[in-house]
Length: 295
Image (cartoon, rainbow, N blue to C red; front, top):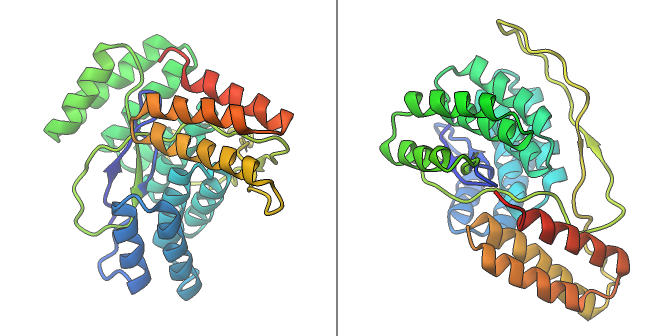
């Protein structure tokens, strides 16, 4: 049974990730959920990794680690985990929804629309997927399609708080907060801000999305393999100044996720002043422009 948590990115209903709820979660899963609930996303990902070692066939564990990784800004890792979760549970609407949110964070809006559509085919009542698909349409400039999805999602949504947030976002004509799921039994939906666009570093390697065929009516047109580009890991040999700059850039992503846009921009400005690597400075400037673009 999948339980949903909300978060947001550039007007999505939530771009973080839905934690999956299992009836009898393992000790590692419970530990990961507790850490995730207190915003300790890197530690939560480690706990979910332990759960994966204990049971590599648990799609819940892979999904939850993807959700935690997405909140740390590791979009490549999140997509890889959602891919594996879908291999294990190819008819799980929430995992398609989560991967759609990760693709939005990477700026791959067309690929995200495909995943949101698959999610709604598998779970016609998943209003957040409809709403976030509208937000992805909006990012592509397809305003009529966006408004149609937003109106439909608002009509479908039964939770008063979520419906109100959708109405506020739609009335402004901007995409609302997005959602991501983690495995938490009996958790009620609650808003959390979304994952920002991809990273702050050069030399990143695209990771293709593994297609997961599912029977659906009508069938979803096949999409080209999406490519996700994100921040590379920090090199252990980097100077203390560079490490400070990259830590600030990483914190900026978390701040943007949590709705602190001004704090995120301040961290990026400081990171830009500290970063000695020219290529990374260019990437920080690019991220600042993305985060500060009109919503």
